[in-house]
Amino acid sequence: MSRVYNFSAGPAVLPEEVLKEAAAEMLDYKGTGMSVMEMSHRSKAFDEIIKTAEADLREIMNIPDNYKVLFLQGGASQQFAMIPMNLMKNKKAAYIITGQWAKKAYQEAKMYGDAVEVASSADKTFSYIPDCSDLDIPEDADYVYICENNTIYGTKFKELPNTKGHTLVADISSCFLSEPVDVSKYGVIYGGVQKNVGPAGVVIAIVREDLITEDTLPGTPTMLKYKTHADAESLYNTPPCYGIYICGKVFKWIKNMGGLESMKELNEKKAKILYDFLDQSQLFSGTVVAKDRSLMNVPFITGNDEVDAKFIKEAKAAGFENLKGHRSVGGMRASIYNAMPMEGVEKLVDFMKKFEEENK
Image (cartoon, rainbow, N blue to C red; front, side, top):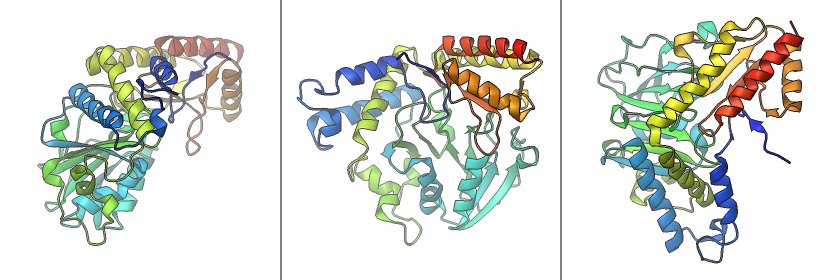
């Protein structure tokens, strides 16, 4: 069985070199006589894996020294609670709602304090990013929250909001390591790794040190305090060892590819191929305002549910997997993360052209 072109939004395609390397080490990791899946998280071998992974991530993202890198569990969704529990000192926070995940984070935060919606693009089915240059942010807001790339709707913040001096918190799950980022602009920048970085089960949170304190909301569980994990260097309890090991390999792969500048260049080229086709197609059309388009997630439609279904079915038969749009929006979506090869996007466009010819 040959490899398919996997356009899944997550868990998503991983670099083939990484999978081959992991396969070669499956039974015996570097002469230890065991798999990483089997080794103690307190062992010398794993200590080296997690420390190297962190060092490589710091190098790739140019993370300042006053930020902690935490390898956590519970996915991005657990951060929806962890963020207010750790940061809501004044019991107030501002949320910008640009899709389903920002909305879920906002609803969760309401359980812990006064979460205020300061901007939203719900009025046009989240097909654009609202103007965030002059938001009405409460003076005493503890932070401003965004979901930077919207996996379901295919939008991306090209400019960060003007937080007027407030701490910025960003969920970057679906644009993690896709382009250079200035970490110093954020208080917390975090993401589930299963879209662009590794297998499901790990979330990486990069947290500015002054935000990591004992002073959390009353009743915050030990496991949900950033301080617990920061103090224990992500080894307070057994971490998702194998997932971290694969993430570490992906970091090395990104370094070998030339780092985040190169990734961005490659991602822009890939996305351009698909968007250029959508813009001139008579059958297919993109759903997002052009200036706010994501490089990672590209939703598109034919305008006819039956034709959409036919396209998804025929695409699958031709080796293009997971092109069905999110159940909440329908249509199609191609997620073209870092590990999706250029050829995958080119072949998809060729297939779409052929389908269009046959279904005019």
